Image (cartoon, rainbow, N blue to C red):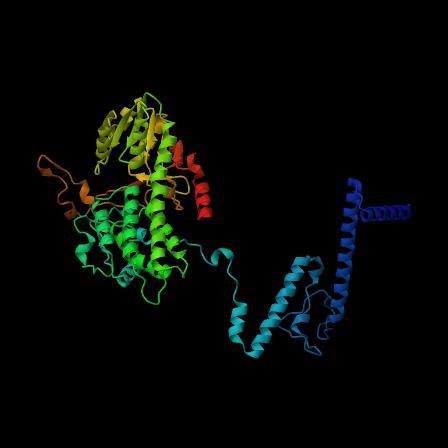
Length: 533
């Protein structure tokens, strides 16, 4: 019966093999049978290998004449009594333990590898290659300990690091630019950021020769530090106009290429402006664009032709990215404004003001509530501009925003930058307005040009921000100044934050020159921009 079962199995296996050769599909039973057969063959092979290894060990085992006859063969000889052998046995042929048959393949392989390593090290010791031995024996570090991936932080957010400050001072010294000193006691949470005083501008510390920094750049830097030129769009446009004047006055030195020399010429200018006031995200994008256009100029191009190309590129950037973008955003935003709406705005955003002007000119009937906050009180400028156009307005401070929100139908906010994770960076207080609006179920619309979109990721207002002059918080009422000598109090620090970060949960819609998108679509816009560039 057993023989017939074996013959049947063999015949069935033969049928399965033929079916496989012919390309036919096997049934479930045939597949299971084939699997079982393979497992059976594997087990037989392992048994044969174990038997062969046992036989080879018996042959290799030296016969110990010193062992007493009364001791059983399985008992080990004490290590203290050396057994006399006819010939020295190599390290690779050391007797294996009796339980080798029970070891798995992986364990056997590991033992073989260990023997090979020991042989290799013994050879290197004989040769005297100690250095090579050290490198061979040195254990490999796990992947987590190889090199920790640490992204380089920008210099302006590492002010509390003395090494970074030394590096920055050396860089500015090479560029012949003074290092602006910090002012006043800083709150510990923001000790890594710069804090400057408007009373001590950068030019007072060191006389700047005209050969190093262009006069237009010096003027612009002082306007930035004094707060005369404020707002992302205004700062970016002023920067581009200053660079236009720099390009007009530029002449290529002998034996130099314009594309290389002009980029090097701009580096100290950018460092100087950064010392006057940290660059905004929109300014950083504009500088990247100019540098890219300069590097794209072919070497055979004449100087005057190259300069005219660059000036045209800057004009196109201002026109397309700022002026036309504002018109496109206004066109999309007007669709969201209905007759009888009460629109709340915060601070003074040039883009939001432009949208409201356009909507008013289109005969939309609405009322505006301007929310403002100390110490800048920028809302007063927005109020002046809107009232001048004939728009009905109400002016309140941010402390009263929760009382005024029940009558609001929409909130329009400007933006300093839109970050890659969908967070909105804007004037400090914006996140508070958005939070309260969300609590009252009032839609929050953020208006922002795509040139302000930034690759940076941020979830709080602590790591990367800007500190303004703390003296701006000092107020004189009825001839009395309460915080006049605040610096003499060692435990007192005045914090004048410039920006805050609004989570995407508080923003219903972002209106851009590309259309109306949610905050989560910012990475897509950035990807498209990178492809276009």
